[in-house]
Image (cartoon, rainbow, N blue to C red):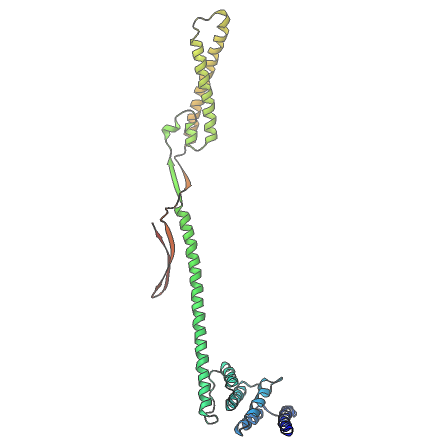
Length: 297
């Protein structure tokens, strides 16, 4: 038993040494010769030696088979050898790597059993389906990404639409009649409240002063010596107040008409109707996709 194990181990050691020698012999062995040696191992039924040979020749460090066409043939022999020893998983690995490097690869039908050819073609269809599924998924992802961009643009348009719907522009048309009224009415109409307050304040004080001084003067038609001075002062104050009132009233009317603004406008916020709904609409069409916004009230 020990002797048998020793012989088996010695057999693998000798094969490994032979492989190294063939590869290392002056590096004189051409890639065609390396492939041919592996082919002879396969044809002689030495399947384990075949997979070991091509494992070193193709995936070794460094590999001795580098020409893509020869590497493909080597993987074909290696896959067939793995199938012969019923290691189908590793056989499929070899066929997968072979076909992903060259999907158009066609083996020599006379060199391999029909089952090996069928397995290669099965792997070919599997890879083609995977590639087709991946291409379809990539195309769908691009389509979805494009639709997302369009939806984002539509949502921005919806925001702009809501902003537009939530504001209103109010135009106020001014009147020349109001511009001709005293007490700053024309200034307020023209949108100058500070000037309007000034005219209204001065004219109001002048009017009150004139009124009080007038009634005080009238209430003392025949003043005595002791109140004569006050009545005279009230009369003077009345004249000054009336003059001030008239000057500012006329001046305010003139200024309001000179600076007359035919119309004023302002933007106001307004609440959106509770039933207002604005949603993006994506509809497939014969020419592509229609994207828009739908507003309902």
